[in-house]
Length: 242
Image 1: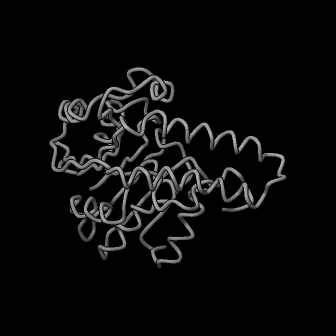
Image 2: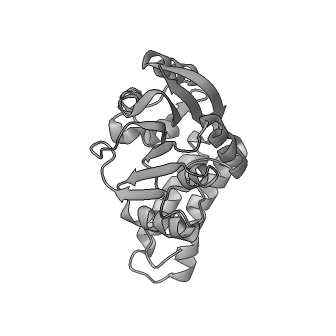
Image 3: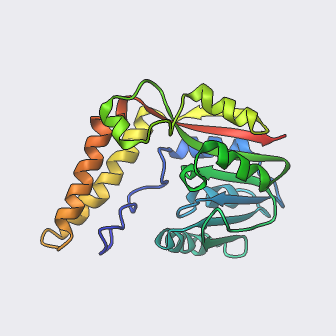
């Protein structure tokens, strides 16, 4: 972790509960081909985008995120992997940033930017070519949330897995693939999210922000372990635009 207590993603490969193996399974389902354009809305440091483009010679990738630090990390990886001529990352608001309709679109954990899942599906459909594919990553309730979990997520923010799929079908898509993050993926993601900040605290025990960072970690860990760990799911839907 860097000098900033806000640099809390350094131990994560993806900003979602996603393993290496599953990432490649999902990429395979997108059917990226030579000449295709892949656009990742809310790309973070664009790890999934770089993997999708990097394995298909001639494919092009565009990524957009409002987090300048994440984009800087992504651009460093673009250069390190020799993809500067095929991948372009931008710091911008995903809801107003414009690009030509894509062959493949990705939106993982970014539905909040559009105001919910249905609005995200509509926005992605407008940004896809007919027959284009969308990888949507979004949360759902595997079982009824307890009171602590309900404090973390706004009432009505999430539905069930079947409701998530129904929303996609009603929004003009057909479902090609469905997967859900496993317990190991969730625990790895949450543990590493906390660990990056804990390492910073170990290296900076007297920093003026130490108490604030410690409080953030403690609150997050309690929300996870005492709240949503046994009820929150995260789904990956591979969709095709009708």
